[in-house]
Image 1: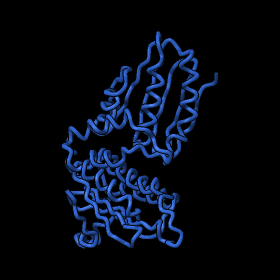
Image 2: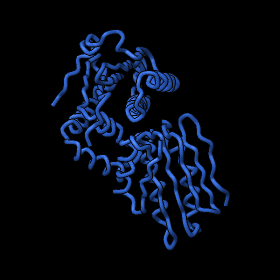
Image 3: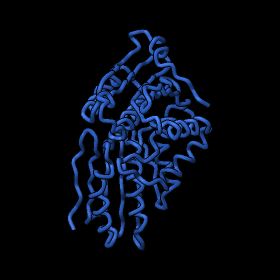
Image 4: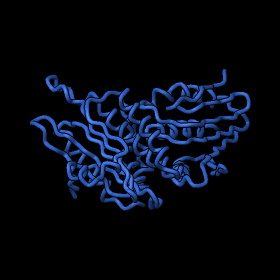
Length: 124
Length: 189
Protein backbone atom coordinates (compact mmCIF):
# COMPACT_ATOMS: atom_id res chain seq x y z
CA UNK A 1 0.00 0.00 0.00
CA UNK A 2 1.26 3.49 -0.89
CA UNK A 3 1.66 6.54 1.30
CA UNK A 4 -1.13 9.11 1.12
CA UNK A 5 0.14 12.56 0.26
CA UNK A 6 -1.50 15.80 -0.84
CA UNK A 7 0.02 19.29 -1.02
CA UNK A 8 -1.87 22.03 0.76
CA UNK A 9 -3.95 24.59 -1.12
CA UNK A 10 -5.60 27.82 0.04
CA UNK A 11 -8.63 25.80 1.12
CA UNK A 12 -7.37 22.32 1.88
CA UNK A 13 -4.67 21.03 4.21
CA UNK A 14 -1.45 19.20 3.52
CA UNK A 15 -2.03 15.51 4.10
CA UNK A 16 0.97 13.29 4.68
CA UNK A 17 0.19 9.76 5.83
CA UNK A 18 3.19 7.45 5.88
CA UNK A 19 2.27 3.78 5.89
CA UNK A 20 5.78 2.55 6.78
CA UNK A 21 6.41 4.80 9.81
CA UNK A 22 2.85 5.40 11.03
CA UNK A 23 3.58 9.16 11.06
CA UNK A 24 0.50 11.08 9.95
CA UNK A 25 0.27 14.84 9.45
CA UNK A 26 -2.53 17.23 8.58
CA UNK A 27 -1.54 20.89 8.45
CA UNK A 28 -2.75 24.20 7.06
CA UNK A 29 -6.38 25.05 6.57
CA UNK A 30 -9.41 22.96 5.88
CA UNK A 31 -12.28 25.02 4.52
CA UNK A 32 -13.50 23.24 1.36
CA UNK A 33 -17.21 23.69 0.56
CA UNK A 34 -17.51 19.98 0.09
CA UNK A 35 -15.43 18.34 2.77
CA UNK A 36 -16.80 14.83 2.25
CA UNK A 37 -15.64 14.83 -1.36
CA UNK A 38 -12.20 16.05 -0.27
CA UNK A 39 -11.72 13.55 2.57
CA UNK A 40 -13.30 10.49 0.95
CA UNK A 41 -10.02 9.18 -0.59
CA UNK A 42 -8.24 9.57 2.76
CA UNK A 43 -11.01 7.70 4.58
CA UNK A 44 -10.75 4.88 2.05
CA UNK A 45 -6.98 4.82 2.50
CA UNK A 46 -7.43 4.61 6.28
CA UNK A 47 -9.87 1.70 5.89
CA UNK A 48 -6.97 -0.20 4.31
CA UNK A 49 -4.33 1.07 6.75
CA UNK A 50 -6.17 -0.03 9.88
CA UNK A 51 -6.14 -3.63 8.65
CA UNK A 52 -2.34 -3.71 9.07
CA UNK A 53 -1.36 -0.68 11.14
CA UNK A 54 2.13 0.21 12.36
CA UNK A 55 3.03 -0.66 15.96
CA UNK A 56 2.62 3.02 16.69
CA UNK A 57 0.49 5.49 14.75
CA UNK A 58 1.14 9.12 15.58
CA UNK A 59 -1.17 11.70 14.01
CA UNK A 60 -0.16 15.38 14.16
CA UNK A 61 -3.04 17.79 13.56
CA UNK A 62 -1.73 21.32 12.99
CA UNK A 63 -4.63 23.24 11.57
CA UNK A 64 -4.87 26.97 11.25
CA UNK A 65 -8.59 26.98 10.47
CA UNK A 66 -11.25 24.42 9.70
CA UNK A 67 -14.91 24.73 8.83
CA UNK A 68 -17.67 22.73 10.49
CA UNK A 69 -18.02 20.26 7.62
CA UNK A 70 -14.31 19.47 8.00
CA UNK A 71 -14.83 18.89 11.71
CA UNK A 72 -17.33 16.14 10.83
CA UNK A 73 -14.70 14.58 8.58
CA UNK A 74 -12.11 14.78 11.37
CA UNK A 75 -14.49 12.78 13.54
CA UNK A 76 -14.72 10.20 10.74
CA UNK A 77 -10.92 10.03 10.49
CA UNK A 78 -10.52 9.63 14.26
CA UNK A 79 -13.24 6.96 14.32
CA UNK A 80 -11.24 4.96 11.77
CA UNK A 81 -8.17 5.17 14.03
CA UNK A 82 -10.26 4.12 17.05
CA UNK A 83 -10.75 0.78 15.34
CA UNK A 84 -7.03 -0.03 15.58
CA UNK A 85 -6.59 -2.75 18.19
CA UNK A 86 -3.36 -4.10 19.64
CA UNK A 87 -1.27 -1.18 18.42
CA UNK A 88 -0.61 2.26 19.83
CA UNK A 89 -2.42 5.31 18.45
CA UNK A 90 -1.90 8.87 19.57
CA UNK A 91 -3.17 12.21 18.25
CA UNK A 92 -1.16 15.39 18.81
CA UNK A 93 -3.45 18.41 18.61
CA UNK A 94 -1.41 21.55 17.96
CA UNK A 95 -2.62 25.09 18.63
CA UNK A 96 -0.99 28.48 18.99
CA UNK A 97 -0.65 29.75 22.51
CA UNK A 98 -3.31 32.46 22.26
CA UNK A 99 -5.67 30.48 20.02
CA UNK A 100 -8.39 29.56 22.49
CA UNK A 101 -10.75 28.49 19.73
CA UNK A 102 -8.36 25.86 18.36
CA UNK A 103 -7.60 24.72 21.89
CA UNK A 104 -11.30 24.36 22.61
CA UNK A 105 -11.83 22.39 19.39
CA UNK A 106 -9.21 19.93 20.56
CA UNK A 107 -10.99 19.64 23.90
CA UNK A 108 -14.27 18.99 22.04
CA UNK A 109 -12.73 16.08 20.14
CA UNK A 110 -11.30 14.69 23.37
CA UNK A 111 -14.84 14.24 24.64
CA UNK A 112 -15.89 12.31 21.56
CA UNK A 113 -12.89 10.22 20.64
CA UNK A 114 -11.55 7.22 22.47
CA UNK A 115 -7.88 7.82 21.55
CA UNK A 116 -5.38 9.86 23.58
CA UNK A 117 -5.39 13.42 22.24
CA UNK A 118 -2.35 15.31 23.46
CA UNK A 119 -2.71 19.08 23.48
CA UNK A 120 0.48 20.73 22.23
CA UNK A 121 1.15 24.44 22.22
CA UNK A 122 3.04 25.82 19.23
CA UNK A 123 5.50 28.40 20.55
CA UNK A 124 5.02 31.75 18.84
CA UNK B 1 -37.79 35.03 21.12
CA UNK B 2 -37.74 36.68 17.72
CA UNK B 3 -34.91 39.15 17.39
CA UNK B 4 -35.97 41.71 14.90
CA UNK B 5 -33.12 42.88 12.74
CA UNK B 6 -33.76 46.10 10.97
CA UNK B 7 -31.25 45.82 8.15
CA UNK B 8 -31.69 49.40 7.00
CA UNK B 9 -31.26 50.63 10.55
CA UNK B 10 -28.24 48.42 10.82
CA UNK B 11 -26.56 50.11 7.86
CA UNK B 12 -27.38 53.51 9.23
CA UNK B 13 -25.63 52.91 12.53
CA UNK B 14 -22.29 52.66 10.77
CA UNK B 15 -20.08 55.45 9.59
CA UNK B 16 -18.87 54.78 6.09
CA UNK B 17 -15.36 54.16 7.39
CA UNK B 18 -16.68 51.31 9.55
CA UNK B 19 -17.56 49.24 6.49
CA UNK B 20 -14.66 46.97 5.63
CA UNK B 21 -16.43 45.52 2.62
CA UNK B 22 -19.89 44.98 1.27
CA UNK B 23 -21.47 43.19 -1.63
CA UNK B 24 -24.93 43.27 -3.05
CA UNK B 25 -25.92 41.24 -6.09
CA UNK B 26 -26.07 37.81 -7.60
CA UNK B 27 -23.71 35.21 -6.25
CA UNK B 28 -22.21 31.89 -7.26
CA UNK B 29 -19.54 29.61 -5.85
CA UNK B 30 -16.67 31.59 -7.39
CA UNK B 31 -17.98 34.87 -6.10
CA UNK B 32 -18.35 33.49 -2.58
CA UNK B 33 -14.77 32.25 -2.80
CA UNK B 34 -13.63 35.69 -3.86
CA UNK B 35 -15.53 37.32 -1.01
CA UNK B 36 -13.76 34.95 1.40
CA UNK B 37 -10.36 35.84 -0.09
CA UNK B 38 -10.96 39.58 -0.04
CA UNK B 39 -12.38 39.48 3.49
CA UNK B 40 -9.33 37.58 4.65
CA UNK B 41 -6.94 40.11 3.11
CA UNK B 42 -8.89 43.02 4.64
CA UNK B 43 -8.94 41.31 8.00
CA UNK B 44 -5.15 40.93 7.89
CA UNK B 45 -4.92 44.69 7.42
CA UNK B 46 -7.24 45.72 10.24
CA UNK B 47 -6.80 43.10 12.97
CA UNK B 48 -3.41 42.76 14.68
CA UNK B 49 -4.39 39.88 17.01
CA UNK B 50 -4.10 36.52 15.31
CA UNK B 51 -6.62 34.84 17.64
CA UNK B 52 -9.33 37.42 16.84
CA UNK B 53 -8.42 37.33 13.15
CA UNK B 54 -8.88 33.56 13.09
CA UNK B 55 -12.16 33.71 14.97
CA UNK B 56 -13.63 36.34 12.66
CA UNK B 57 -12.39 34.52 9.57
CA UNK B 58 -13.90 31.26 10.78
CA UNK B 59 -17.29 32.87 11.21
CA UNK B 60 -17.03 34.57 7.81
CA UNK B 61 -16.35 31.21 6.17
CA UNK B 62 -19.26 29.50 7.96
CA UNK B 63 -21.68 32.26 7.03
CA UNK B 64 -20.69 32.40 3.37
CA UNK B 65 -20.57 28.61 3.05
CA UNK B 66 -24.01 28.36 4.64
CA UNK B 67 -25.24 30.44 1.72
CA UNK B 68 -23.34 28.22 -0.71
CA UNK B 69 -24.94 25.08 0.72
CA UNK B 70 -28.32 26.67 0.35
CA UNK B 71 -27.89 26.99 -3.43
CA UNK B 72 -30.25 25.10 -5.62
CA UNK B 73 -32.89 24.94 -2.92
CA UNK B 74 -34.82 27.65 -4.68
CA UNK B 75 -35.97 26.32 -8.00
CA UNK B 76 -38.53 28.92 -8.99
CA UNK B 77 -37.92 29.38 -12.71
CA UNK B 78 -39.13 32.92 -13.29
CA UNK B 79 -37.13 34.55 -10.55
CA UNK B 80 -33.72 35.57 -11.86
CA UNK B 81 -32.58 37.12 -8.58
CA UNK B 82 -32.99 34.01 -6.47
CA UNK B 83 -29.25 33.85 -5.93
CA UNK B 84 -28.98 37.46 -4.95
CA UNK B 85 -27.19 38.06 -1.69
CA UNK B 86 -26.10 40.88 0.55
CA UNK B 87 -22.93 40.73 2.55
CA UNK B 88 -21.55 43.41 4.87
CA UNK B 89 -18.40 43.16 6.92
CA UNK B 90 -17.86 46.06 9.31
CA UNK B 91 -15.84 47.00 12.34
CA UNK B 92 -16.48 49.55 15.03
CA UNK B 93 -14.02 50.20 17.82
CA UNK B 94 -15.41 47.39 19.96
CA UNK B 95 -16.86 44.85 17.55
CA UNK B 96 -16.79 43.19 14.19
CA UNK B 97 -20.13 42.80 12.44
CA UNK B 98 -21.01 40.38 9.70
CA UNK B 99 -24.38 40.56 7.98
CA UNK B 100 -25.31 38.17 5.24
CA UNK B 101 -28.61 37.75 3.50
CA UNK B 102 -30.09 35.42 0.94
CA UNK B 103 -33.50 34.36 -0.36
CA UNK B 104 -35.21 31.43 1.30
CA UNK B 105 -38.46 29.66 0.50
CA UNK B 106 -41.22 30.73 2.84
CA UNK B 107 -41.77 27.08 3.74
CA UNK B 108 -38.18 26.91 5.06
CA UNK B 109 -38.74 29.75 7.52
CA UNK B 110 -40.37 27.92 10.47
CA UNK B 111 -37.58 25.33 10.79
CA UNK B 112 -34.81 27.90 10.38
CA UNK B 113 -36.44 30.28 12.85
CA UNK B 114 -36.95 27.48 15.35
CA UNK B 115 -33.31 26.44 15.04
CA UNK B 116 -31.94 29.95 15.59
CA UNK B 117 -34.32 30.63 18.49
CA UNK B 118 -33.23 27.37 20.11
CA UNK B 119 -29.55 28.28 19.73
CA UNK B 120 -30.20 31.76 21.13
CA UNK B 121 -32.00 30.31 24.14
CA UNK B 122 -29.09 28.07 25.17
CA UNK B 123 -26.48 29.21 27.68
CA UNK B 124 -22.85 28.81 26.56
CA UNK B 125 -22.23 25.55 28.39
CA UNK B 126 -25.38 23.93 26.93
CA UNK B 127 -24.46 25.19 23.48
CA UNK B 128 -21.12 23.41 23.83
CA UNK B 129 -22.93 20.16 24.75
CA UNK B 130 -25.24 20.46 21.74
CA UNK B 131 -22.26 21.16 19.49
CA UNK B 132 -20.33 18.12 20.69
CA UNK B 133 -23.41 15.92 20.43
CA UNK B 134 -24.15 17.10 16.89
CA UNK B 135 -20.51 16.66 15.93
CA UNK B 136 -20.55 13.08 17.19
CA UNK B 137 -23.92 11.97 15.89
CA UNK B 138 -25.07 14.23 13.10
CA UNK B 139 -25.16 12.89 9.60
CA UNK B 140 -23.46 14.98 6.95
CA UNK B 141 -26.02 16.15 4.42
CA UNK B 142 -25.63 15.55 0.70
CA UNK B 143 -24.52 19.11 0.17
CA UNK B 144 -21.86 18.92 2.82
CA UNK B 145 -23.55 20.81 5.61
CA UNK B 146 -23.38 19.20 8.99
CA UNK B 147 -26.00 21.24 10.83
CA UNK B 148 -23.17 22.61 12.90
CA UNK B 149 -22.62 25.93 11.19
CA UNK B 150 -25.10 28.06 13.11
CA UNK B 151 -24.12 26.49 16.44
CA UNK B 152 -20.47 27.18 15.69
CA UNK B 153 -21.22 30.77 14.71
CA UNK B 154 -23.14 31.29 17.95
CA UNK B 155 -20.36 29.74 20.04
CA UNK B 156 -17.61 31.80 18.48
CA UNK B 157 -19.48 35.09 18.38
CA UNK B 158 -20.46 34.84 22.04
CA UNK B 159 -23.67 36.70 21.42
CA UNK B 160 -27.16 36.08 20.21
CA UNK B 161 -27.75 35.61 16.51
CA UNK B 162 -29.84 38.43 15.12
CA UNK B 163 -32.01 37.71 12.13
CA UNK B 164 -34.77 38.99 9.94
CA UNK B 165 -37.13 37.45 7.43
CA UNK B 166 -38.52 40.00 5.01
CA UNK B 167 -41.46 38.71 3.00
CA UNK B 168 -40.81 39.12 -0.73
CA UNK B 169 -43.77 37.35 -2.35
CA UNK B 170 -45.93 34.28 -1.81
CA UNK B 171 -42.93 31.96 -2.33
CA UNK B 172 -39.90 33.78 -1.05
CA UNK B 173 -38.50 35.82 1.78
CA UNK B 174 -35.15 37.49 2.22
CA UNK B 175 -33.33 36.08 5.23
CA UNK B 176 -30.64 38.18 6.92
CA UNK B 177 -28.37 37.03 9.70
CA UNK B 178 -26.21 39.36 11.73
CA UNK B 179 -23.34 38.31 13.96
CA UNK B 180 -21.36 40.51 16.31
CA UNK B 181 -17.86 39.49 17.39
CA UNK B 182 -16.06 41.39 20.15
CA UNK B 183 -12.78 42.77 18.80
CA UNK B 184 -11.03 43.06 22.13
CA UNK B 185 -12.32 40.55 24.69
CA UNK B 186 -12.16 36.80 24.28
CA UNK B 187 -15.56 35.16 23.91
CA UNK B 188 -17.03 33.40 26.93
CA UNK B 189 -16.64 29.61 27.12
